Image (cartoon, rainbow, N blue to C red; front, side, top):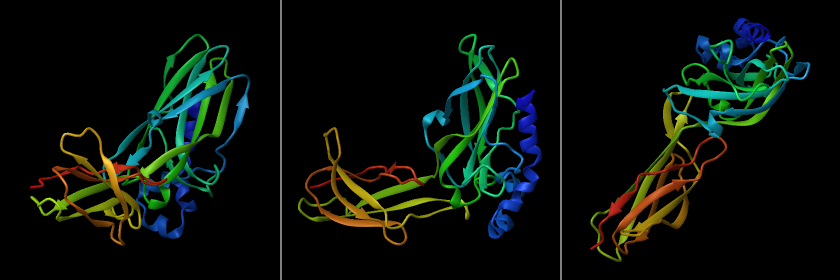
Length: 279
Protein backbone atom coordinates (compact mmCIF):
# COMPACT_ATOMS: atom_id res chain seq x y z
CA UNK A 1 0.00 0.00 0.00
CA UNK A 2 1.31 3.41 -0.94
CA UNK A 3 0.43 4.97 2.44
CA UNK A 4 2.52 2.49 4.41
CA UNK A 5 5.39 2.62 1.94
CA UNK A 6 5.55 6.40 2.00
CA UNK A 7 5.35 6.72 5.78
CA UNK A 8 7.93 3.97 6.16
CA UNK A 9 10.23 5.80 3.75
CA UNK A 10 9.87 9.00 5.73
CA UNK A 11 10.51 7.24 9.04
CA UNK A 12 13.42 5.28 7.67
CA UNK A 13 15.27 8.36 6.55
CA UNK A 14 14.86 10.45 9.70
CA UNK A 15 18.30 9.45 10.92
CA UNK A 16 19.71 11.79 8.27
CA UNK A 17 17.72 14.74 9.48
CA UNK A 18 20.09 15.99 12.17
CA UNK A 19 22.45 16.97 9.38
CA UNK A 20 20.05 19.76 8.41
CA UNK A 21 19.99 21.33 11.86
CA UNK A 22 22.16 24.36 12.63
CA UNK A 23 25.31 23.15 14.37
CA UNK A 24 24.43 24.60 17.77
CA UNK A 25 20.97 23.07 17.74
CA UNK A 26 22.18 19.68 16.49
CA UNK A 27 24.70 19.55 19.31
CA UNK A 28 22.20 20.42 22.03
CA UNK A 29 19.11 18.56 20.83
CA UNK A 30 18.43 15.04 22.13
CA UNK A 31 18.77 12.08 19.78
CA UNK A 32 15.04 12.02 19.11
CA UNK A 33 15.41 15.35 17.38
CA UNK A 34 16.81 13.53 14.40
CA UNK A 35 13.14 13.47 13.41
CA UNK A 36 13.28 17.22 12.86
CA UNK A 37 13.72 16.99 9.08
CA UNK A 38 13.05 14.60 6.25
CA UNK A 39 15.15 13.14 3.45
CA UNK A 40 15.20 15.05 0.21
CA UNK A 41 13.61 12.13 -1.65
CA UNK A 42 10.35 12.63 0.25
CA UNK A 43 8.03 14.10 -2.37
CA UNK A 44 6.07 17.23 -1.54
CA UNK A 45 3.26 17.23 -4.14
CA UNK A 46 2.24 14.23 -6.23
CA UNK A 47 -0.96 12.61 -7.50
CA UNK A 48 -2.37 9.89 -9.67
CA UNK A 49 -6.01 9.54 -10.67
CA UNK A 50 -8.98 11.32 -9.13
CA UNK A 51 -8.44 11.05 -5.37
CA UNK A 52 -8.94 14.40 -3.64
CA UNK A 53 -8.28 15.75 -0.16
CA UNK A 54 -11.14 18.08 0.75
CA UNK A 55 -10.38 19.07 4.33
CA UNK A 56 -7.66 18.81 6.97
CA UNK A 57 -8.30 19.77 10.59
CA UNK A 58 -5.46 19.92 13.12
CA UNK A 59 -6.11 19.84 16.89
CA UNK A 60 -9.78 20.63 16.36
CA UNK A 61 -8.82 23.96 14.80
CA UNK A 62 -7.17 25.16 18.01
CA UNK A 63 -3.59 26.32 18.57
CA UNK A 64 -1.12 23.70 19.78
CA UNK A 65 0.13 25.08 23.09
CA UNK A 66 3.22 23.42 24.55
CA UNK A 67 4.74 23.94 27.98
CA UNK A 68 8.12 22.90 29.32
CA UNK A 69 7.60 19.21 30.09
CA UNK A 70 4.18 17.72 29.32
CA UNK A 71 3.56 16.10 25.96
CA UNK A 72 0.73 17.46 23.83
CA UNK A 73 -1.28 14.90 21.86
CA UNK A 74 -2.57 16.31 18.56
CA UNK A 75 -5.20 14.77 16.30
CA UNK A 76 -5.08 15.42 12.55
CA UNK A 77 -8.30 14.64 10.66
CA UNK A 78 -8.03 14.21 6.87
CA UNK A 79 -11.22 14.11 4.80
CA UNK A 80 -10.71 12.68 1.31
CA UNK A 81 -12.82 11.44 -1.56
CA UNK A 82 -12.45 9.03 -4.47
CA UNK A 83 -15.16 7.48 -6.71
CA UNK A 84 -14.15 4.02 -5.43
CA UNK A 85 -13.91 5.08 -1.80
CA UNK A 86 -10.95 5.90 0.43
CA UNK A 87 -8.51 3.17 1.42
CA UNK A 88 -6.42 5.25 3.82
CA UNK A 89 -5.03 8.70 4.61
CA UNK A 90 -2.28 10.08 6.81
CA UNK A 91 -0.56 13.36 7.68
CA UNK A 92 2.28 14.93 9.62
CA UNK A 93 3.24 18.43 10.76
CA UNK A 94 6.42 20.19 9.73
CA UNK A 95 8.15 23.51 10.30
CA UNK A 96 10.49 25.19 7.86
CA UNK A 97 10.72 27.10 4.63
CA UNK A 98 10.20 24.23 2.17
CA UNK A 99 9.61 20.49 2.24
CA UNK A 100 13.13 19.12 1.88
CA UNK A 101 15.73 17.94 4.37
CA UNK A 102 17.75 21.16 4.11
CA UNK A 103 14.88 23.47 4.95
CA UNK A 104 12.73 21.61 7.49
CA UNK A 105 13.79 22.19 11.08
CA UNK A 106 10.92 20.56 12.97
CA UNK A 107 8.39 17.76 12.57
CA UNK A 108 5.66 15.77 14.32
CA UNK A 109 5.32 12.37 12.70
CA UNK A 110 2.53 9.85 13.49
CA UNK A 111 3.64 6.55 15.00
CA UNK A 112 1.02 4.61 13.05
CA UNK A 113 1.56 3.99 9.34
CA UNK A 114 -2.13 4.44 8.57
CA UNK A 115 -5.05 6.51 9.78
CA UNK A 116 -8.18 5.53 11.68
CA UNK A 117 -10.68 5.91 8.83
CA UNK A 118 -14.43 6.36 9.18
CA UNK A 119 -16.66 6.41 6.09
CA UNK A 120 -18.80 9.50 5.56
CA UNK A 121 -20.42 7.86 2.53
CA UNK A 122 -19.45 5.46 -0.27
CA UNK A 123 -16.86 7.83 -1.74
CA UNK A 124 -15.69 9.91 1.21
CA UNK A 125 -13.94 9.10 4.48
CA UNK A 126 -12.34 11.01 7.33
CA UNK A 127 -9.11 9.45 8.58
CA UNK A 128 -7.49 10.51 11.84
CA UNK A 129 -3.84 10.22 12.87
CA UNK A 130 -2.17 11.22 16.11
CA UNK A 131 1.09 13.11 16.51
CA UNK A 132 2.79 14.30 19.68
CA UNK A 133 4.41 17.64 20.47
CA UNK A 134 7.07 16.83 23.05
CA UNK A 135 9.22 19.64 24.53
CA UNK A 136 11.84 17.05 25.44
CA UNK A 137 12.10 15.64 21.93
CA UNK A 138 10.66 17.26 18.81
CA UNK A 139 9.87 20.73 20.24
CA UNK A 140 13.51 21.39 20.97
CA UNK A 141 13.87 25.16 20.49
CA UNK A 142 12.00 28.46 20.59
CA UNK A 143 12.55 28.89 16.86
CA UNK A 144 9.79 26.32 16.35
CA UNK A 145 7.10 28.60 17.80
CA UNK A 146 4.76 29.98 15.15
CA UNK A 147 3.26 28.63 11.94
CA UNK A 148 3.59 24.96 10.96
CA UNK A 149 2.45 23.19 7.80
CA UNK A 150 0.64 19.93 7.10
CA UNK A 151 1.96 17.23 4.76
CA UNK A 152 -0.84 14.83 3.89
CA UNK A 153 -1.50 11.78 1.71
CA UNK A 154 -4.75 10.03 0.78
CA UNK A 155 -5.27 6.87 -1.25
CA UNK A 156 -8.36 5.57 -3.02
CA UNK A 157 -9.41 1.93 -3.02
CA UNK A 158 -8.40 1.73 -6.67
CA UNK A 159 -4.82 2.76 -5.89
CA UNK A 160 -5.17 6.38 -6.95
CA UNK A 161 -3.64 8.87 -4.55
CA UNK A 162 -2.93 12.53 -3.86
CA UNK A 163 -0.10 13.94 -1.77
CA UNK A 164 0.34 17.54 -0.62
CA UNK A 165 3.48 18.91 0.96
CA UNK A 166 1.68 21.89 2.51
CA UNK A 167 -2.07 21.33 2.35
CA UNK A 168 -2.50 23.70 5.31
CA UNK A 169 0.02 26.34 6.36
CA UNK A 170 -1.65 28.06 9.30
CA UNK A 171 -1.23 25.59 12.16
CA UNK A 172 0.05 27.52 15.19
CA UNK A 173 2.41 25.92 17.71
CA UNK A 174 2.80 28.24 20.69
CA UNK A 175 4.82 28.58 23.88
CA UNK A 176 2.53 28.21 26.91
CA UNK A 177 2.12 31.37 28.99
CA UNK A 178 1.41 32.19 32.63
CA UNK A 179 0.10 35.42 34.14
CA UNK A 180 -0.34 36.48 37.77
CA UNK A 181 -2.01 39.38 39.61
CA UNK A 182 -1.59 40.67 43.14
CA UNK A 183 -3.26 43.85 44.43
CA UNK A 184 -2.09 45.38 47.72
CA UNK A 185 -2.47 46.53 50.41
CA UNK A 186 -5.55 44.61 51.49
CA UNK A 187 -7.84 45.75 52.96
CA UNK A 188 -7.55 49.35 51.80
CA UNK A 189 -9.40 52.59 52.47
CA UNK A 190 -11.47 54.11 49.70
CA UNK A 191 -9.51 56.69 47.69
CA UNK A 192 -6.12 55.30 48.69
CA UNK A 193 -3.56 54.08 46.16
CA UNK A 194 -3.63 50.41 45.32
CA UNK A 195 -0.56 48.79 43.76
CA UNK A 196 -1.22 45.96 41.32
CA UNK A 197 1.73 43.73 40.47
CA UNK A 198 2.06 40.59 38.42
CA UNK A 199 4.26 38.68 36.01
CA UNK A 200 3.93 37.46 32.44
CA UNK A 201 6.04 34.39 31.71
CA UNK A 202 6.16 31.82 28.92
CA UNK A 203 7.76 28.45 28.27
CA UNK A 204 11.35 28.44 27.10
CA UNK A 205 11.76 25.19 25.16
CA UNK A 206 15.55 25.44 25.29
CA UNK A 207 15.88 25.66 29.09
CA UNK A 208 12.69 23.75 30.04
CA UNK A 209 11.73 26.65 32.32
CA UNK A 210 9.32 29.57 32.28
CA UNK A 211 10.91 32.98 31.73
CA UNK A 212 9.66 36.56 31.62
CA UNK A 213 7.97 37.71 28.41
CA UNK A 214 9.33 41.21 28.07
CA UNK A 215 7.93 44.44 26.64
CA UNK A 216 4.45 43.04 26.08
CA UNK A 217 1.20 45.00 26.38
CA UNK A 218 -1.06 43.72 29.15
CA UNK A 219 -4.45 45.05 30.21
CA UNK A 220 -5.40 45.68 33.83
CA UNK A 221 -9.10 44.96 34.30
CA UNK A 222 -11.49 45.55 37.19
CA UNK A 223 -14.90 44.15 38.09
CA UNK A 224 -16.89 45.70 40.92
CA UNK A 225 -18.33 43.24 43.41
CA UNK A 226 -21.73 42.13 42.12
CA UNK A 227 -21.04 43.22 38.52
CA UNK A 228 -21.18 40.77 35.62
CA UNK A 229 -18.27 41.96 33.50
CA UNK A 230 -14.78 43.44 33.66
CA UNK A 231 -13.73 46.92 32.56
CA UNK A 232 -10.24 47.70 31.27
CA UNK A 233 -8.63 50.37 33.44
CA UNK A 234 -5.32 50.75 31.60
CA UNK A 235 -2.76 48.99 29.43
CA UNK A 236 0.83 48.65 30.63
CA UNK A 237 3.93 46.83 29.39
CA UNK A 238 5.91 44.08 31.06
CA UNK A 239 9.45 45.06 32.05
CA UNK A 240 12.72 43.40 31.04
CA UNK A 241 11.94 40.45 33.31
CA UNK A 242 8.27 40.13 32.44
CA UNK A 243 7.12 41.86 35.63
CA UNK A 244 4.05 44.10 35.78
CA UNK A 245 3.36 46.99 38.14
CA UNK A 246 0.93 49.88 38.19
CA UNK A 247 -1.26 51.85 40.59
CA UNK A 248 -4.96 52.74 40.77
CA UNK A 249 -7.24 54.47 43.26
CA UNK A 250 -9.36 52.13 45.38
CA UNK A 251 -13.05 52.86 44.84
CA UNK A 252 -15.11 49.85 45.89
CA UNK A 253 -14.86 46.14 46.68
CA UNK A 254 -13.95 44.28 43.53
CA UNK A 255 -11.69 42.06 41.49
CA UNK A 256 -8.50 42.96 39.62
CA UNK A 257 -6.87 40.89 36.92
CA UNK A 258 -4.31 41.15 34.13
CA UNK A 259 -5.14 40.03 30.58
CA UNK A 260 -2.64 39.29 27.80
CA UNK A 261 -4.02 39.12 24.25
CA UNK A 262 -1.31 36.81 22.92
CA UNK A 263 1.06 36.93 19.95
CA UNK A 264 1.90 34.71 16.97
CA UNK A 265 4.15 32.59 19.20
CA UNK A 266 2.38 32.79 22.57
CA UNK A 267 -1.31 32.23 23.42
CA UNK A 268 -3.59 34.64 25.21
CA UNK A 269 -3.77 34.24 28.96
CA UNK A 270 -5.82 35.74 31.80
CA UNK A 271 -4.64 35.74 35.40
CA UNK A 272 -6.65 34.56 38.35
CA UNK A 273 -8.52 37.57 39.75
CA UNK A 274 -7.47 39.12 43.07
CA UNK A 275 -10.30 40.41 45.27
CA UNK A 276 -9.72 43.68 47.13
CA UNK A 277 -11.71 44.70 50.21
CA UNK A 278 -12.23 48.47 50.16
CA UNK A 279 -13.34 50.06 53.46
